[in-house]
Image 1 (spheres, one colour):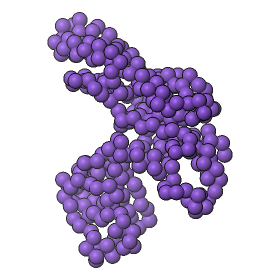
Image 2 (cartoon, one colour):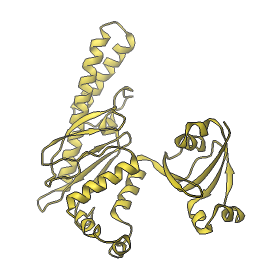
Image 3 (cartoon, rainbow, N blue to C red):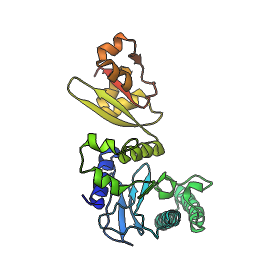
Image 4 (cartoon, rainbow, N blue to C red):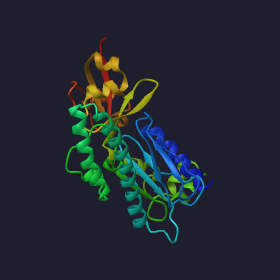
Length: 286
């Protein structure tokens, strides 16, 4: 399996795990479309530094931004990082310019709210035209803006000491058991995914039945009621309370009944802040 194919497969795994689209490009200096699943953004970001067909390209989603780079002997990762950050600033400048032009036109109606937004956008544009990311903007950004430079940025450097696609391509030909014998620690994908979850503030909770166990993502700090709504709005609407067991405790106990016998299961209300790895059984009535 070629490294490029491994990269594309990893993109697919990110899509399934995080719920956003990963675009793939075909050559250096290609301008790639970066979009969210919900269609709220459709950006074009200049892409350089990738030199092989099928290389994963920048990823944009409502939570964060990931840049993949192919490493060559002449590649300077720090230079690539600076170039990427500049690309994002330029993309934000174009975005603000378009929004400002639209709001200025609408403000001709005399609407004071639109005039106020146009004034704020002018200050935002001046900030980004000076080469500054909007994450450092001192004021409050207009709500309709979806800037890239306010999102978490994760760099994956392909090569020794980073995300080694060559090694992953070789290990992909082996069984999971054999592949783990060649790794010092968790698989690269799991390590990267953990970093992504941490950067964008996501945790994982589980629901477990007799025949199926499912993993769900939730924002860190969200409550049991919000977790219930993630599963189904009817469950949240009829929320009574939820049974909570730490996943490690459930695995060790072997069953929910045994975990309860050991005193490892507890009842929590709707305001309970869900912890990473919690197994929830929501009691509800609709």
